[in-house]
Image (cartoon, rainbow, N blue to C red; front, side, top):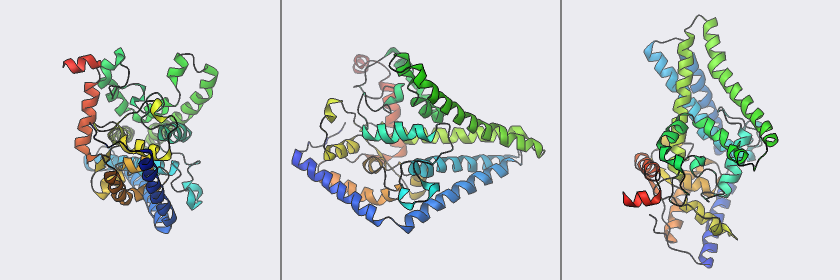
Length: 360
Protein backbone atom coordinates (compact mmCIF):
# COMPACT_ATOMS: atom_id res chain seq x y z
CA UNK A 1 0.00 0.00 0.00
CA UNK A 2 3.03 2.30 -0.01
CA UNK A 3 4.51 4.17 -2.95
CA UNK A 4 7.92 5.15 -1.56
CA UNK A 5 10.75 5.92 -3.93
CA UNK A 6 13.79 3.71 -3.48
CA UNK A 7 16.85 5.69 -2.42
CA UNK A 8 20.43 5.27 -3.54
CA UNK A 9 23.18 4.87 -0.95
CA UNK A 10 24.13 8.51 -1.43
CA UNK A 11 20.53 9.61 -0.91
CA UNK A 12 20.23 7.42 2.19
CA UNK A 13 23.35 9.03 3.63
CA UNK A 14 21.99 12.50 2.91
CA UNK A 15 18.59 11.55 4.34
CA UNK A 16 20.22 10.30 7.54
CA UNK A 17 22.44 13.40 7.80
CA UNK A 18 19.42 15.72 7.60
CA UNK A 19 17.60 13.85 10.37
CA UNK A 20 20.75 13.71 12.50
CA UNK A 21 21.08 17.47 12.12
CA UNK A 22 17.44 17.98 13.10
CA UNK A 23 17.97 15.86 16.20
CA UNK A 24 21.13 17.77 17.16
CA UNK A 25 19.39 21.15 16.79
CA UNK A 26 16.56 20.00 19.02
CA UNK A 27 18.91 18.60 21.68
CA UNK A 28 20.78 21.90 21.78
CA UNK A 29 17.50 23.76 22.34
CA UNK A 30 16.26 21.73 25.32
CA UNK A 31 15.89 23.73 28.50
CA UNK A 32 13.65 25.29 31.13
CA UNK A 33 10.43 25.13 29.08
CA UNK A 34 10.78 21.36 28.64
CA UNK A 35 11.49 20.83 32.35
CA UNK A 36 8.55 23.04 33.32
CA UNK A 37 6.27 21.08 30.98
CA UNK A 38 7.04 17.63 32.37
CA UNK A 39 6.68 18.90 35.95
CA UNK A 40 3.26 20.28 35.02
CA UNK A 41 2.31 16.90 33.56
CA UNK A 42 3.35 15.25 36.82
CA UNK A 43 1.21 17.78 38.70
CA UNK A 44 -1.76 17.11 36.43
CA UNK A 45 -1.40 13.36 37.01
CA UNK A 46 -1.45 13.82 40.78
CA UNK A 47 -4.40 16.23 40.63
CA UNK A 48 -6.48 13.93 38.43
CA UNK A 49 -5.71 10.77 40.41
CA UNK A 50 -6.28 12.20 43.86
CA UNK A 51 -9.37 14.18 42.82
CA UNK A 52 -10.78 11.06 41.23
CA UNK A 53 -10.08 8.93 44.28
CA UNK A 54 -11.65 11.55 46.56
CA UNK A 55 -14.83 11.67 44.47
CA UNK A 56 -15.08 7.87 44.47
CA UNK A 57 -15.20 8.03 48.26
CA UNK A 58 -18.63 9.63 47.91
CA UNK A 59 -20.07 6.29 46.82
CA UNK A 60 -22.44 5.39 43.98
CA UNK A 61 -23.97 8.88 43.55
CA UNK A 62 -23.89 8.93 39.70
CA UNK A 63 -22.40 12.38 38.98
CA UNK A 64 -19.53 12.07 41.45
CA UNK A 65 -18.88 8.34 40.80
CA UNK A 66 -18.70 8.85 37.04
CA UNK A 67 -16.58 11.99 37.34
CA UNK A 68 -14.28 10.32 39.87
CA UNK A 69 -13.81 7.29 37.64
CA UNK A 70 -13.12 9.44 34.59
CA UNK A 71 -10.65 11.64 36.47
CA UNK A 72 -8.82 8.60 37.85
CA UNK A 73 -8.76 7.05 34.37
CA UNK A 74 -7.47 10.32 32.90
CA UNK A 75 -4.73 10.48 35.52
CA UNK A 76 -3.69 6.90 34.76
CA UNK A 77 -3.64 7.61 31.01
CA UNK A 78 -1.50 10.71 31.48
CA UNK A 79 0.86 8.88 33.83
CA UNK A 80 1.19 5.93 31.47
CA UNK A 81 1.50 7.82 28.19
CA UNK A 82 2.87 11.33 28.61
CA UNK A 83 4.78 10.88 31.88
CA UNK A 84 5.90 7.28 32.43
CA UNK A 85 6.53 6.16 28.86
CA UNK A 86 8.45 9.29 27.94
CA UNK A 87 10.47 9.51 31.15
CA UNK A 88 11.45 5.83 30.92
CA UNK A 89 12.81 6.55 27.43
CA UNK A 90 15.33 8.89 29.07
CA UNK A 91 13.79 11.96 27.44
CA UNK A 92 14.38 14.03 30.58
CA UNK A 93 17.64 12.55 31.86
CA UNK A 94 19.38 15.82 30.98
CA UNK A 95 17.46 17.49 33.87
CA UNK A 96 19.48 15.45 36.42
CA UNK A 97 16.32 15.19 38.52
CA UNK A 98 15.93 11.76 40.21
CA UNK A 99 12.14 11.92 39.77
CA UNK A 100 12.55 12.05 35.99
CA UNK A 101 15.48 9.66 35.60
CA UNK A 102 14.72 7.14 32.88
CA UNK A 103 16.57 4.25 34.55
CA UNK A 104 14.84 4.73 37.92
CA UNK A 105 11.25 5.68 37.10
CA UNK A 106 8.60 3.08 38.02
CA UNK A 107 5.19 3.59 36.48
CA UNK A 108 1.62 2.87 37.57
CA UNK A 109 0.92 -0.30 35.54
CA UNK A 110 1.36 -4.03 36.13
CA UNK A 111 4.49 -4.35 34.03
CA UNK A 112 7.78 -3.53 35.77
CA UNK A 113 9.56 -0.60 34.14
CA UNK A 114 12.72 -2.73 33.84
CA UNK A 115 10.81 -5.10 31.56
CA UNK A 116 9.72 -2.21 29.35
CA UNK A 117 13.20 -0.71 29.22
CA UNK A 118 14.42 -3.93 27.58
CA UNK A 119 11.55 -5.18 25.41
CA UNK A 120 10.47 -1.73 24.25
CA UNK A 121 13.31 0.76 24.54
CA UNK A 122 16.02 -1.63 23.41
CA UNK A 123 14.50 -4.45 21.32
CA UNK A 124 11.52 -2.73 19.71
CA UNK A 125 13.17 0.60 18.98
CA UNK A 126 16.28 -1.07 17.58
CA UNK A 127 14.45 -3.54 15.34
CA UNK A 128 11.17 -1.73 14.65
CA UNK A 129 8.85 -3.95 12.57
CA UNK A 130 11.58 -6.47 11.66
CA UNK A 131 9.93 -9.88 11.56
CA UNK A 132 11.59 -12.34 13.90
CA UNK A 133 13.43 -9.58 15.80
CA UNK A 134 10.71 -7.17 16.95
CA UNK A 135 8.28 -9.05 19.23
CA UNK A 136 5.88 -6.09 19.09
CA UNK A 137 4.73 -7.23 15.62
CA UNK A 138 1.53 -8.90 16.76
CA UNK A 139 2.92 -9.55 20.27
CA UNK A 140 3.03 -13.26 19.39
CA UNK A 141 -0.78 -13.46 19.34
CA UNK A 142 -1.88 -11.56 16.25
CA UNK A 143 -1.11 -11.86 12.54
CA UNK A 144 -1.21 -8.35 11.04
CA UNK A 145 0.89 -8.73 7.89
CA UNK A 146 0.84 -11.36 5.14
CA UNK A 147 4.58 -11.81 5.68
CA UNK A 148 3.86 -13.41 9.07
CA UNK A 149 3.63 -17.20 8.89
CA UNK A 150 0.05 -18.30 9.48
CA UNK A 151 -0.82 -20.54 12.45
CA UNK A 152 -4.21 -22.13 13.22
CA UNK A 153 -4.88 -20.09 16.36
CA UNK A 154 -4.81 -16.89 14.26
CA UNK A 155 -8.35 -17.80 13.13
CA UNK A 156 -9.50 -16.61 16.55
CA UNK A 157 -7.38 -13.49 16.71
CA UNK A 158 -10.33 -11.06 16.96
CA UNK A 159 -10.96 -12.74 20.34
CA UNK A 160 -7.27 -12.64 21.32
CA UNK A 161 -7.07 -8.95 20.37
CA UNK A 162 -10.16 -8.14 22.45
CA UNK A 163 -8.67 -9.83 25.50
CA UNK A 164 -5.33 -8.15 24.86
CA UNK A 165 -6.97 -4.72 24.70
CA UNK A 166 -8.90 -5.24 27.93
CA UNK A 167 -5.81 -6.55 29.76
CA UNK A 168 -3.18 -4.57 27.90
CA UNK A 169 -1.03 -3.69 30.91
CA UNK A 170 -0.61 -7.40 31.65
CA UNK A 171 -0.04 -8.27 28.00
CA UNK A 172 3.01 -6.04 27.65
CA UNK A 173 4.35 -7.27 30.99
CA UNK A 174 4.01 -10.95 30.09
CA UNK A 175 5.73 -10.25 26.76
CA UNK A 176 9.05 -9.83 28.57
CA UNK A 177 8.73 -13.25 30.25
CA UNK A 178 9.23 -14.92 26.84
CA UNK A 179 7.01 -17.86 27.73
CA UNK A 180 7.21 -19.01 24.11
CA UNK A 181 10.96 -19.49 24.53
CA UNK A 182 10.39 -21.54 27.67
CA UNK A 183 7.84 -23.69 25.83
CA UNK A 184 10.30 -24.27 22.96
CA UNK A 185 13.11 -25.14 25.38
CA UNK A 186 15.19 -22.11 24.35
CA UNK A 187 14.92 -20.57 27.84
CA UNK A 188 15.25 -22.50 31.09
CA UNK A 189 12.83 -22.31 33.99
CA UNK A 190 15.73 -21.15 36.17
CA UNK A 191 16.07 -18.11 33.91
CA UNK A 192 12.33 -17.52 34.09
CA UNK A 193 11.96 -17.66 37.89
CA UNK A 194 13.56 -14.28 38.78
CA UNK A 195 11.49 -12.60 36.06
CA UNK A 196 8.33 -14.20 37.42
CA UNK A 197 9.16 -13.00 40.93
CA UNK A 198 9.63 -9.45 39.65
CA UNK A 199 6.40 -9.67 37.64
CA UNK A 200 4.39 -11.10 40.56
CA UNK A 201 5.72 -8.47 42.97
CA UNK A 202 4.69 -5.61 40.67
CA UNK A 203 1.24 -7.06 39.97
CA UNK A 204 0.69 -7.62 43.71
CA UNK A 205 1.72 -4.04 44.41
CA UNK A 206 -0.75 -2.68 41.84
CA UNK A 207 -3.59 -4.91 43.01
CA UNK A 208 -3.01 -4.01 46.67
CA UNK A 209 -3.09 -0.30 45.85
CA UNK A 210 -6.14 -0.20 43.58
CA UNK A 211 -8.17 -3.17 44.72
CA UNK A 212 -7.33 -3.50 48.43
CA UNK A 213 -5.95 -0.33 50.03
CA UNK A 214 -8.46 2.21 48.70
CA UNK A 215 -11.55 -0.05 49.13
CA UNK A 216 -10.40 -0.81 52.70
CA UNK A 217 -9.90 2.91 53.29
CA UNK A 218 -13.46 3.44 52.09
CA UNK A 219 -14.69 0.85 54.61
CA UNK A 220 -12.84 2.58 57.43
CA UNK A 221 -14.44 5.87 56.41
CA UNK A 222 -17.89 4.30 56.27
CA UNK A 223 -18.06 4.62 52.48
CA UNK A 224 -19.28 2.05 49.96
CA UNK A 225 -16.12 0.07 49.24
CA UNK A 226 -17.68 -1.62 46.21
CA UNK A 227 -18.12 1.76 44.52
CA UNK A 228 -14.44 2.54 45.08
CA UNK A 229 -13.38 -0.89 43.81
CA UNK A 230 -15.56 -0.60 40.70
CA UNK A 231 -14.20 2.88 39.97
CA UNK A 232 -10.63 1.62 40.14
CA UNK A 233 -11.40 -1.35 37.87
CA UNK A 234 -13.08 0.86 35.27
CA UNK A 235 -10.29 3.47 35.40
CA UNK A 236 -7.69 0.78 34.70
CA UNK A 237 -9.87 -0.60 31.91
CA UNK A 238 -10.15 2.83 30.27
CA UNK A 239 -6.36 3.23 30.43
CA UNK A 240 -5.81 -0.25 28.93
CA UNK A 241 -8.19 0.30 26.01
CA UNK A 242 -6.81 3.75 25.19
CA UNK A 243 -3.19 2.62 25.34
CA UNK A 244 -3.93 -0.41 23.17
CA UNK A 245 -5.68 1.68 20.52
CA UNK A 246 -2.96 4.33 20.35
CA UNK A 247 -0.11 1.80 20.15
CA UNK A 248 -1.78 -0.38 17.51
CA UNK A 249 -2.63 2.70 15.44
CA UNK A 250 1.02 3.74 15.55
CA UNK A 251 2.36 0.44 14.22
CA UNK A 252 -0.19 -1.65 12.33
CA UNK A 253 -2.16 0.58 9.98
CA UNK A 254 -2.68 -0.16 6.31
CA UNK A 255 0.44 1.75 5.22
CA UNK A 256 2.78 0.49 7.95
CA UNK A 257 5.56 -1.68 6.53
CA UNK A 258 7.37 -4.73 7.92
CA UNK A 259 10.90 -5.86 7.09
CA UNK A 260 12.85 -9.09 6.81
CA UNK A 261 15.95 -9.93 8.82
CA UNK A 262 18.01 -9.82 5.64
CA UNK A 263 16.99 -6.22 4.98
CA UNK A 264 18.77 -4.94 8.11
CA UNK A 265 22.13 -6.66 7.54
CA UNK A 266 24.76 -3.92 7.36
CA UNK A 267 22.08 -1.29 7.93
CA UNK A 268 23.33 2.31 7.74
CA UNK A 269 22.07 5.19 9.87
CA UNK A 270 20.08 6.53 6.93
CA UNK A 271 18.47 3.15 6.31
CA UNK A 272 17.57 2.83 10.00
CA UNK A 273 15.80 6.20 9.81
CA UNK A 274 14.03 5.11 6.63
CA UNK A 275 12.79 1.93 8.31
CA UNK A 276 11.38 3.92 11.23
CA UNK A 277 9.54 6.21 8.82
CA UNK A 278 8.07 3.40 6.73
CA UNK A 279 7.08 1.25 9.72
CA UNK A 280 5.23 3.99 11.63
CA UNK A 281 1.87 5.75 11.48
CA UNK A 282 0.83 9.16 12.79
CA UNK A 283 -2.55 10.37 14.03
CA UNK A 284 -3.89 13.83 13.33
CA UNK A 285 -5.63 15.80 16.06
CA UNK A 286 -5.54 18.75 18.43
CA UNK A 287 -3.11 19.56 21.23
CA UNK A 288 -5.12 17.81 23.97
CA UNK A 289 -5.44 14.68 21.84
CA UNK A 290 -1.66 14.58 21.32
CA UNK A 291 -1.04 14.99 25.06
CA UNK A 292 -3.44 12.14 25.89
CA UNK A 293 -1.57 9.86 23.49
CA UNK A 294 1.74 10.75 25.13
CA UNK A 295 2.48 12.33 21.74
CA UNK A 296 2.60 8.81 20.32
CA UNK A 297 0.14 10.25 17.81
CA UNK A 298 3.48 11.37 16.35
CA UNK A 299 4.73 7.79 16.18
CA UNK A 300 6.97 8.54 13.20
CA UNK A 301 8.86 11.18 15.13
CA UNK A 302 8.94 8.97 18.23
CA UNK A 303 10.55 6.13 16.30
CA UNK A 304 13.02 8.51 14.70
CA UNK A 305 13.92 10.32 17.94
CA UNK A 306 12.82 8.18 20.95
CA UNK A 307 15.06 10.02 23.42
CA UNK A 308 13.87 13.55 22.55
CA UNK A 309 11.08 15.02 24.73
CA UNK A 310 7.78 14.03 23.15
CA UNK A 311 6.38 17.55 23.51
CA UNK A 312 8.77 18.47 20.69
CA UNK A 313 7.33 15.98 18.21
CA UNK A 314 4.60 18.27 16.85
CA UNK A 315 7.18 20.84 15.77
CA UNK A 316 9.56 18.15 14.51
CA UNK A 317 6.75 16.61 12.45
CA UNK A 318 6.61 19.68 10.22
CA UNK A 319 10.26 19.29 9.22
CA UNK A 320 10.17 15.49 9.10
CA UNK A 321 7.22 15.55 6.70
CA UNK A 322 9.01 18.04 4.46
CA UNK A 323 12.19 15.92 4.42
CA UNK A 324 10.21 12.72 3.74
CA UNK A 325 8.31 14.24 0.85
CA UNK A 326 11.46 15.72 -0.64
CA UNK A 327 12.99 12.22 -0.72
CA UNK A 328 9.84 10.72 -2.21
CA UNK A 329 8.71 8.90 0.95
CA UNK A 330 5.13 8.42 2.13
CA UNK A 331 4.41 10.27 5.38
CA UNK A 332 1.69 8.09 6.87
CA UNK A 333 -0.76 10.28 8.82
CA UNK A 334 -4.52 10.09 9.27
CA UNK A 335 -7.34 10.61 11.73
CA UNK A 336 -7.65 8.32 14.73
CA UNK A 337 -10.86 6.75 13.43
CA UNK A 338 -9.48 6.16 9.92
CA UNK A 339 -6.22 4.63 11.16
CA UNK A 340 -8.01 2.46 13.73
CA UNK A 341 -10.35 1.20 11.01
CA UNK A 342 -7.39 -0.01 8.93
CA UNK A 343 -5.96 -1.80 11.98
CA UNK A 344 -9.27 -3.58 12.57
CA UNK A 345 -9.39 -4.60 8.90
CA UNK A 346 -5.89 -6.07 9.18
CA UNK A 347 -6.88 -8.06 12.26
CA UNK A 348 -9.90 -9.48 10.45
CA UNK A 349 -8.25 -10.03 7.06
CA UNK A 350 -5.10 -11.83 8.19
CA UNK A 351 -6.86 -14.17 10.62
CA UNK A 352 -6.99 -16.68 7.72
CA UNK A 353 -4.19 -18.00 5.46
CA UNK A 354 -3.22 -15.77 2.58
CA UNK A 355 -4.80 -18.16 0.08
CA UNK A 356 -8.15 -17.72 1.85
CA UNK A 357 -7.72 -13.92 1.86
CA UNK A 358 -7.13 -13.89 -1.89
CA UNK A 359 -10.10 -16.21 -2.50
CA UNK A 360 -12.34 -13.98 -0.40
